[in-house]
Image (cartoon, rainbow, N blue to C red):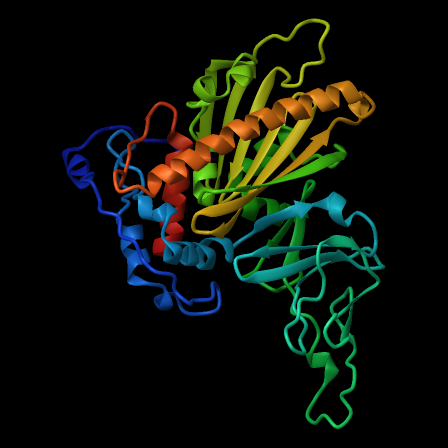
Length: 409
């Protein structure tokens, strides 16, 4: 069910809201997800403790700037946030047919998603078991994965088919040298993986409950789980900001829209903005302004903006659905992947498609300028912490509380 927000003040909470001091740290040589949590720097642990999720929203201060600038803090996030639980990595159109595959990277984890000749979906670490070369790159179709280094060859089910020039090798069983599996599943049109559980038995209903919690049914009723919308295009942006800056911008309850997105604001009834939070999901809704009668309405009557912790955003409006995946590249850079889906009846309306994508691109350029400006401010000596606008920034605070819970656990 939705999580209620308490805004009641308390003297003890106000006292705890004292301004925390952010600390900088140097990059640790920790490999995320492979070593004990104690290997992460003391600086990162102090930064986690500097945010108090128990302070009521009206009294709370935002996380310190070090959350957005410290390399060791990002290593902790990779280990305790991204490499645990279900993560969205793509859409089913990328592995629609037998022998389709695509690759990706999250932190130090290289992975490949593929569909074998029998139509079964698989995910593996994209690393040859011989001398660690990457096996595949990009996306496309393959009947097998052959290592470009020494020719070791694997089936799309991960089995080692051929190990070249190993005559004389002792104590070697090729059955022990298949690709390392990653748990993979789908929910609606989305491909999900989890790096902390290699078991392969998954049921989509269970996946939906684990990934989305009690918001699963609501998102299904909003048409977000539909597989009937064809994929139109993908756009990728490398942004000079911490991945959380992009998420925070998404989660401010439309606060920035009238100031930064004038064209978009004219199509929305911003006074209708509403926000609900669930276990790992927040949902923002906004009614659209009436469109001109002769126009096809890009925004529809009501837009739904769903944020799935930690970094996946799903936007459903009119005949469109688009998704945004914010992938950390380093402490101050991220890649954001946009995928666009459209009602099949409008695929041949090229003017509408082009105009809609152009409008979306304008919003992205405006958001990128905002996010990069915020990152520069976070890195300045003038800023340590800020405050929340309690009437609109509930989802942002919810996001920060979830992060704190994972990072301090």
